[in-house]
Length: 118
Length: 111
Image (cartoon, rainbow over all chains, first blue to last red):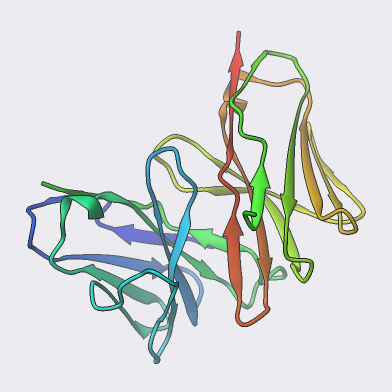
C-alpha cells in the first residue's frame, strides 16, 4: 500500500512555543491530505482538510489561526501548532488519499506525532 | 446522535473465541465503509473494506446492510495478536470528501 510519513514522531515543547509537523506521501501524489487529532482512549477527530495550492478547510471548532496548515506541494502538508498550550497535547495523525488507487476512498495514515506541551 | 456509533466495549475473550462488532451510521448518503485496526499509540491501519455483498478475509468477515445503516465485523478463532481497537469508518462525498470514525471498540484476547 501507499506510504505516508510524519515528522517528528514525538515532540515535547514549552507553553507558548510553536511546533511544526510534516506529513509526506512517499510514493504517490496527494492533492488532499487530512489532519486528525486523537486524545487518549478517544477516536480520531478530523481537524482540517489540506488542499494542495489552496487554503485548508477547517472543521467546526478548530481555530485556523492556531493550527496553521500549508500544503505547498503534492507530497507535503505541514501543520503548525502556534503558541502551544498543555491542552494541545495530543496525538496528531495525517492521512492522504491516493486518487490513482483502485479505491480512492481509502486513506493512508502517517504514523502520528505525539505532542506534549509542558 | 453520533454519526458513527460502535459497541462501547471492551470485549474480553479467550483465544479461539468468535467475536462480533457492530456499528451504525446516520448519514444514508455515505458511500464507503471500512474497518480499521489501531494498536495502542499507533496509527490506524486498514483491516478491510466493507461491501453490501459481504466480504471475507481469512478469519475476518465484514458485512454491510445499507437499509439498516449497519456494519459488522466478525472475527473467528481469535488470536492474542487480534487484541487492538477496531474502528468503524464511514466516508462520503456530500459537501466534500469526509471521513467519520467511530469511537472504536477495544478487544482483549486472553490466553
